[in-house]
Amino acid sequence: MPAYLIVTAHVDDRDAFMRGYAPAAGALVERMGGKYLLRAPGAIALEGRTDDGASIVVSEWEDMAALRAFWDSEEYARIRALREGIARCEVMAVETPPAS
Image 1: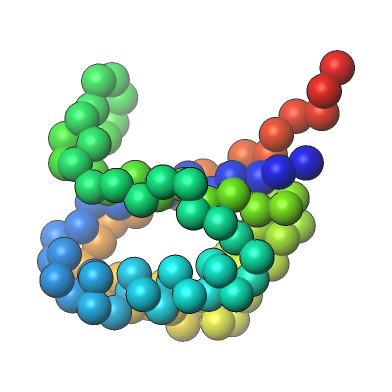
Image 2 (image 1 turned 180 degrees about the horizontal axis):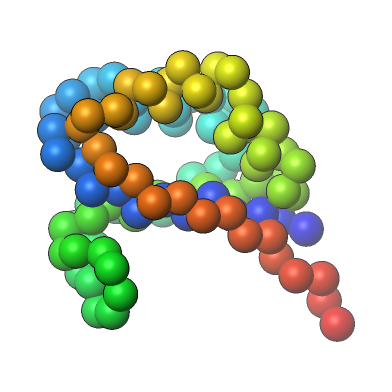
């Protein structure tokens, strides 16, 4: 069952984010079998905690085990550190329920 990683990012220093974190994370996502479905800045908040202007990123994975292998990897932990101080992120993972 496919699983999805959904990130809402409030990027404070877009230049630094795009030079460091974004290309490194993108390469690792692709190498570990993920596929980006959406990478877009400028979200408009209609309800909830997110402010206008956030970036939304959605990646698809074969299943939750593949998603967690990426998220929990030592390599991603090193890459995630590249966004410290330049972006505040909310991250969720969800797996497609089985068909009934």
